[in-house]
Amino acid sequence: MFALRLCTQVSRVPFEAFNFGRGGSMRGLKVAVVGAVGGIGQPLTLLLKQNPHISVLSIHDIRNTAGVAADLSHINTPATVCNFEGKSGLKKAMDKADIVVIPAGLPRKPGMRREDLVDVNASVACEVAHAASAVCPGALLAFITNPINVIVPIVATILKAKGTYDPNRLFGVTTLDVVRSKTFIGDILNVDPRTVDLPVIGGHTGHTILPILSQCQPLYKGSDEERQALIRRIQEAGTEVVKAKDGLGSATLSMAYAAYHFVESLIKGIKGSKDECIVECAYVDSDVTEAKFFATQLILGPQGIKENIGLPEMDDEEKQALECMLPNLKKSIENGIKLGEEMSC
Ligand SMILES: NC(=O)C1=CN([C@@H]2O[C@H](COP(=O)(O)OP(=O)(O)OC[C@H]3O[C@@H](n4cnc5c(N)ncnc54)[C@H](O)[C@@H]3O)[C@@H](O)[C@H]2O)C=CC1
Ligand SMILES: O=C([O-])CC(=O)C(=O)O
Figure 1 (tube, rainbow, N blue to C red):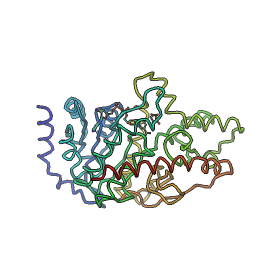
Figure 2: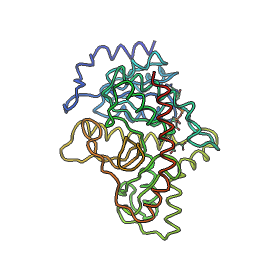
Figure 3: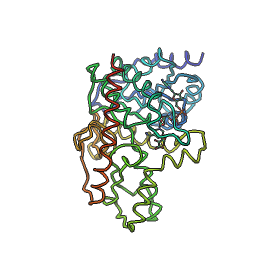
Figure 4: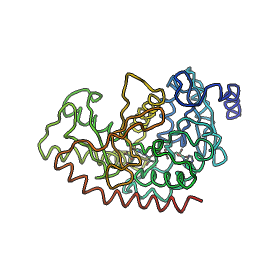
């Protein structure tokens, strides 16, 4: 009943009325969240419902979307909430979306590596890639689903096979690594963590997460030991949460915060602010290293990535750490491309 009522609300305002073409500043955006009922999905939709630029918030999951949609729809902000379920609902949920955020899929339990999620989560990525090709080939796609290092190459390969791949529009969300780095460094320096800035490059697991402390603002000057401990904490922060949750999943609230921040930046890019340069780190198609996908700082614009800033300046230890992680990252990417080829039909 609710699903019907909420979707009818949307149909009263034709999508065309929002002018979904890119480049305008007055139009409302359609943002779809796939996996919206989950631990990340729910707080993320709560944050998105409050964004004044979103006119349609389309939520999708394999179950229970009606309750979440009814709940969200009572919040007195302009975004209209629309809910869809299951495979048959995915294309409807994503139809003509400007941005699709994907926190769908299995999270880790203690003792698991992110890579252990690939068998289950690859199929989620595959479904979303096929739906995006069919109903929103121009959308910006932001994947949260782990393992990011493998999922993004899978999606890119499927989109390529479908002829709808635009490398500037596909992102693996690594914002949480930056959020955590800012928090931990803010604590150490005793400053507001929001004022801390640094690039976190590479991928999103273990030593592929490389915070570039030498470029941190304000300056971070720890001893070698302190520096190593800090890097290790940033790299293992996901596992810290998985252990603390003791079988009840992985980071959800901090991830929803990070994902919202990232989507907000995508929106600012679409809106094309003249005064502000929108810079975010994300895991994307890349030629800055030997790895075909790599996270670096990106300048965002109306069509997604406007410019890849490339590798930051690094000290010798950081250069060595980069060399050290590349073989592993490249292996994950090759695996992703192979899986994507198998799932492309
Ligand atoms: N990129 C990052 O930094 C982070 C990534 N993650 C990843 O995000 C993913 C989600 O985590 P949680 O929200 O904690 O998990 P969760 O289990 O609480 O929620 C996942 C949701 O996805 C839904 N889902 C599963 N298959 C689906 C499909 N085919 N279509 C639509 N919805 C589907 C489930 O029904 C569930 O509601 C996990 O893979 C996790 O590892 C988590 C934290 C940080
Ligand atoms: O650790 C996990 O499984 C979830 C994740 O990616 C993170 O918290 O960084």
